Length: 278
Image (cartoon, rainbow, N blue to C red; front, top):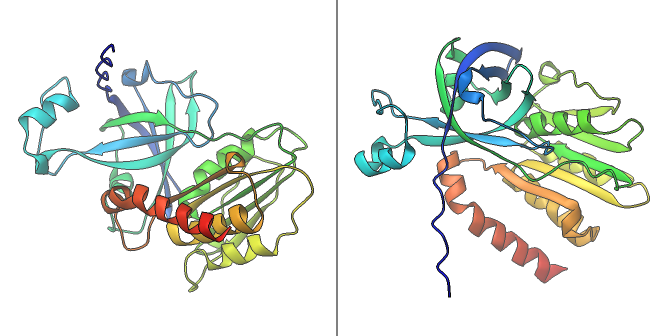
């Protein structure tokens, strides 16, 4: 049997911060550009994402940057860590990439960076990845998520053809976090206040009178409410797996490193539990 060819190492993209914009009190946009995006492309997926590379403070890497060389020559604690962010917009003509960051002051890694990012700063990232886009063959669309899913939901709504039937629910902290989306679909904004994350969202989706016909759903955000909505759609509503894009972008009490390390096992367990109860 022929040996499988070795996987070609992925080369990170290198870009510069072009400008930043505060969209809401807790959402910051960073627009990247520069010659390093000359070979960057994004397809039709509306949930395209990139993995930003953040090196530890005080650590510099040889140029040209090579991830394989970093892993070979630097101790593991000096390797860059990754943070995943949805592509809010890609402008191929001007070669500008817009990323939106949920920020909570000094909490986390990427959010604080986005707040202090300045034009000209170099940013490295992997990607894009992505797997979802609204299917024109669906009779209607359900989109539901929290702030972390808002960029992907907004991009999907803006990609829907005129006249498409869609129900969109986005849970945010309060009315000051609502955003303008260039779509004819009326977004139901759910204001969390002091309630647990996702509680209002689950209630709203459960209360929805589902239209007739084939539905395609995009449900993303904090893992606990995603699990509950996945159960509702897969088990109670018996929506086929191929018509669902459902995943926990993050999990309360975990940073991205911890969540990604356990996500596959957690998803498998959830699937097993829901299949058993179907």
